[in-house]
Length: 184
Image 1: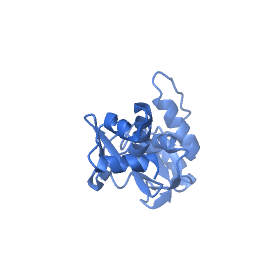
Image 2 (image 1 turned 45 degrees about the vertical axis):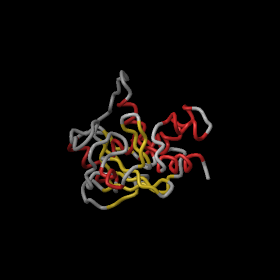
Image 3 (image 1 turned 180 degrees about the vertical axis):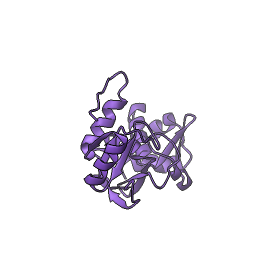
Image 4 (image 1 turned 90 degrees about the vertical axis):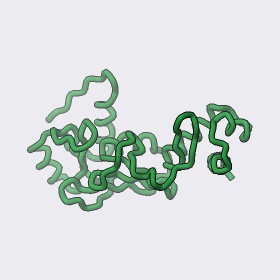
């Protein structure tokens, strides 16, 4: 059994603080904190008030990145190692990608902003920075077809980008103190 699985087992047995977990496992506090951060990203644990608890299924209605309630029509869902990790919108989903990168991402799905059709996040087109801010800011909206994304950007502004370009654009905009010029 791996250390993360052992941590889950110990939490289930009632060892809910990091110091106790580190002592039981015979590792440093930093090692346990790193493992807990990964378990949190995987949606398996929640940290609250200095304690670590197993994540209950009813907690699944909140964004793994910002904590907002997830609206089905805008959500982005990653499948990582058999777990669902949800983001409230493409903005948070794109930022969440960097934290999940290198993990066993099996799939990522979102919905086309116009049609509501379920689409693959990695092949979608995104309009970043439009005036249509429906959830988090800067706005990032997913489209199945580049033509739809271009038409939307023509009316509401923003840049049309593929997945990797959208991840980079949202990261740059969110960096504190970094001025970003969007070409509209």
